[in-house]
Length: 137
Length: 59
Image (cartoon, rainbow over all chains, first blue to last red; front, side, top):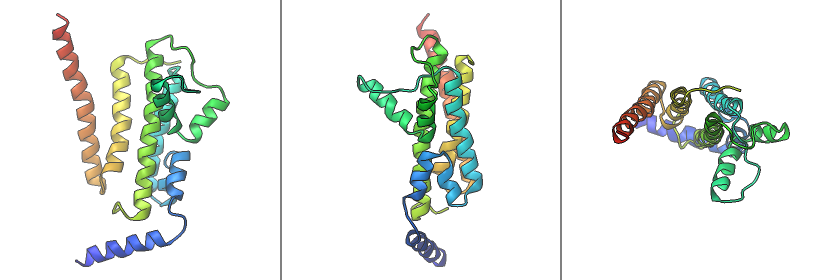
């Protein structure tokens, strides 16, 4: 009973201070940053390493960064890529990633990049849930 | 440019995805570790199982 009250009180405190969506936005822009803002150093580091590794491996496999959407599949790929936040925009600015997919591994790489983006969105939402108190700790 | 085999690519995805799933889907470190291992086993196990199914279908 006491612990439930403490949890509710801590959740209320968390929602009172500052901009609630900051961990969500920071977590989307930079993998793990949402958790770092909440002082979850270990989790943030593991998330950042996992997501950045997938993205970098995807690029190293000559995976494609979607630049536009001509059909529904490309649109889904673009949405997945956008989940990478700043990494996607930096990659676009530096013209990283292969364009015509010539090898099987390039197809894997494209999926790695999309998957990294989707995992980053999950991590950012987790940071938001921690911030609002929806997730206990 | 790196060119991993299909199975190596699967292992890489399984390791990183299981880490993220474990951290985001559970509350305590112990439960995170268990859920991460569970996801990793399902990723790799289902791929091996489906590979054998496809192997026998192709014959």
